[in-house]
Length: 357
Image (tube, rainbow, N blue to C red; front, side):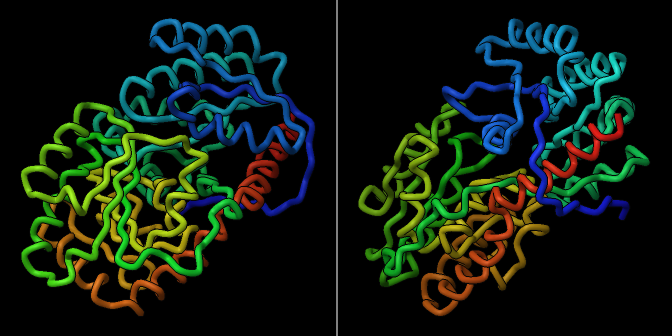
């Protein structure tokens, strides 16, 4: 595979960066917004577009910023997702390319490969405008490699590793699920697996499950109803969203993290669980097998299969040593994704691009 090497330079630069994406920080921090916050601490100056809540004003602001601010910035970073957001990224990249502003495409989302299959010419066109293409996982790089001759720069999603304090004594047989309540993340699968497990595990009454996330499409109500239908009220606690800064604390005393999604890339929620030394059980979709190794630092199962998830839960709940060993291995891997390492990679890339000019 054609990947460029990841630079390792301790550089402190003073440059102006234009970031294009959906920066709705009141409800959700976009990847580039988090990145901008971290790199600002290193002396970089960022302009973000756009914070408008409604789509049309937001897109207009993105395009206007590209037209009017490119000459005052050294480089631009554009978040690239599938769906409608892809088309805004394409338009912005075209403008910046025409105005000779270096463009870094920051790829996100497990749906990008399938989007590329449906829209190959648009993806190739977008990539042609890029000075660099950053992928947070080998999965995205491998799947999108056929659409460009350019080499991908692999830079993982970052976390503040030190904020994930690992408690010496975790709650035994505690399970946590953290994601938005949306059908694509399939939270109902966990409830269905617990209902199956309840019939087989004598110690089921000792299990405590916490589900955390904001509702996106009405799935939260579906989960609540399913918990009632299976009489799991004493087992499952649902917390409908908490500030991101509180995630480390709620993860810190949990033993097992469950990821039930249908589609994924390199989810920060899973990396956060790894940093909290949780034993991870996850679907083996998208970039997950590139991030986690089955039966070493995680148990992987087929998406949508409640029986598979039940079997994985039963095995790991019955084997204390397995939970501890998988958590330890996951913790080691998560250390390499601390912002101190990730920022160094980004600084080196941005410095290399701007020095060419």
